[in-house]
Length: 227
Ligand SMILES: N[C@@H](CCC(=O)N[C@@H](CS)C(=O)NCC(=O)O)C(=O)O
Image 1 (cartoon, rainbow, N blue to C red):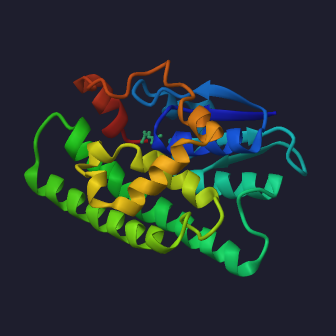
Image 2 (cartoon, rainbow, N blue to C red):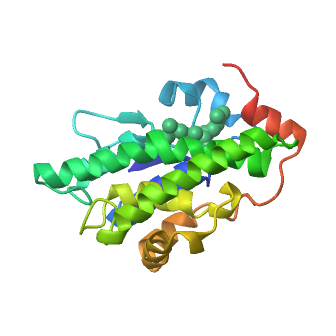
């Protein structure tokens, strides 16, 4: 059994999508990041960076294993199941580089765009412009990649797609229009047809309405806390 520490955001949904795609058994432990659950001492033992997602695999080789960082969790689950990561070196490196591009590039920049376009209580035009422009550049990179490839890492669906899809899902929060990126739009709609992806992306959407604007107290607990 895998314990998943989760809130239904882009980073959280990467893991529910992979768990559903692999047909693994898991238990969801909600970490309400607007209420400060991520700072609880018990959670910090699993995820010292006070962010979800995190997992504990009670059936891991060598004993229970706690993992934080969505990219590391995806790589672990791919290794555990032998799924969604090619066995050959060239294929594996395609997946790894695009996975790292997601966790180090499009993910954090989209996160900043979400803050300045969607969450912030004030309007900072310079920051909005900066992150919308950078996110548009990254969408362009993805669009060119998908012009010649069915999936992000090539001809096979992989954890690189699962890491990226839940972030593209919020294109409007990033000030983007999918009509400007036809290959991204084609890929996004194609993946949305996958039953496991759809199920994973909807885990926990009944416990929170992410479209609801945060109040100042929620925003402070999420964005302005020192550890
Ligand atoms: N690099 C981390 C980022 C995870 C992350 O940013 N999680 C956010 C929600 S999407 C979070 O838990 N925020 C709580 C906080 O910053 O206090 C990963 O890929 O897992």
